[in-house]
Structure formats: C-alpha cells, structure tokens
Amino acid sequence: MSRNRQNYRKNLKVDGTMVVGSNEITFFTKDVSLDGFHACYTEAASLEKGDIVYVRLPMLKMEGVVSTVWKDSGLNAVHHIGFKFLNMRGVGGSAHHYRESEQRISEI
Image 1 (spheres, rainbow, N blue to C red):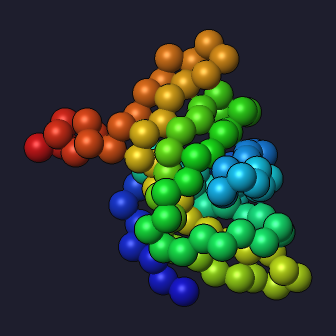
Image 2 (cartoon, rainbow, N blue to C red):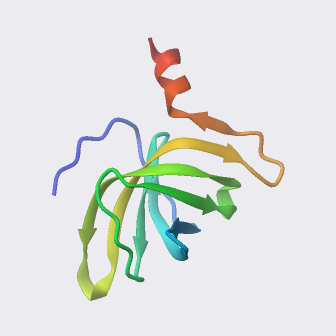
C-alpha cells in the first residue's frame, strides 16, 4: 500500500483516545509527523475517509480535532487509520497550538 508522504514520520508509540459518537475508543500511535499520525485500535468504529474526530494524546500533551485520511483493517482484528491534524492544542502545561488553516497561510 503506497501513500504519499509530505513530512518525515517519527516511529512513536503512545496511547490515545478518540471520541466517535458517544464512545471513547483507545488506540496507540504507530508513527507521528507534523501533519498527523498513524493509529492502531481493536474496537469497532464506523469511521470513513474524511470523518472528523476528536482525539486526546496525553503523553504528547495534545488534544483536538483530526480528519481521517485513510483506513485499513489489518491482521487479528487490528484496525489502522491515518489521521490528519486539523486543530490541535497543547494541554497540561504545553503551549502547542496547531491549526491547519494557519499552517497553510504561513507556507505561502
């Protein structure tokens, strides 16, 4: 499976949660880049490409809104999904703030 990479990806395994409807689903990241991350999870979640999801990444001290970019079911009922950061903010003392629209403006 080939995906176009826009940024360097760091292999980084941290726990997180995503809010899908009224459910909180736990996942772990496989890798993280400046624009998003690859997550793995085992619980059923009806996510499609382009869905907007709220995520929390406590070990990275970040939470916010992401969009699904791709989705794949792997072996042993492990699901893989690619998320793109849309509007993330730092929590727990982190001053980080990322908003996709501001990022695009600064690149012009």
